Image 1 (cartoon, rainbow, N blue to C red):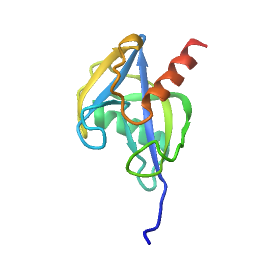
Image 2 (cartoon, one colour):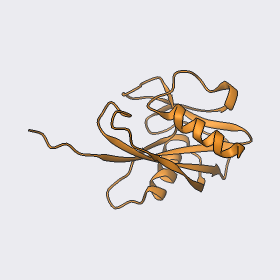
Image 3 (cartoon, rainbow, N blue to C red):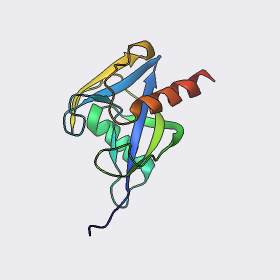
Image 4 (cartoon, rainbow, N blue to C red):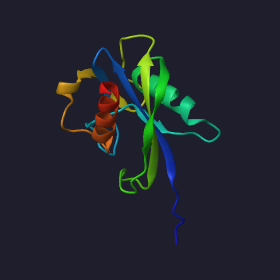
Length: 135
């Protein structure tokens, strides 16, 4: 029997001027869907370092963490297996995103324009971030 494992990932909610940064996934799962920039935490890496690294790899943007948004741990949130994601709200040091790594596009959307085809549970994470911003 194969040993079951839990993986740890990060998601970056980059919000600037009322806009949210999303990437179009270039790989499965959810190829072609929009998602928050993020990915898996590497061995020996903190989640804080991982989210800044992943956002830069996928969008070309240098960011800084504003705050921890939350931990998303539903066992079925990722079709690859049980993945726990630590989500952070970030701000950018520069404004022009360029897709990279496993993203096919990186685009700013207003909260009203967020597309329907969002990967994973990222729509819930986006809603949580927008709720936090309006408090």
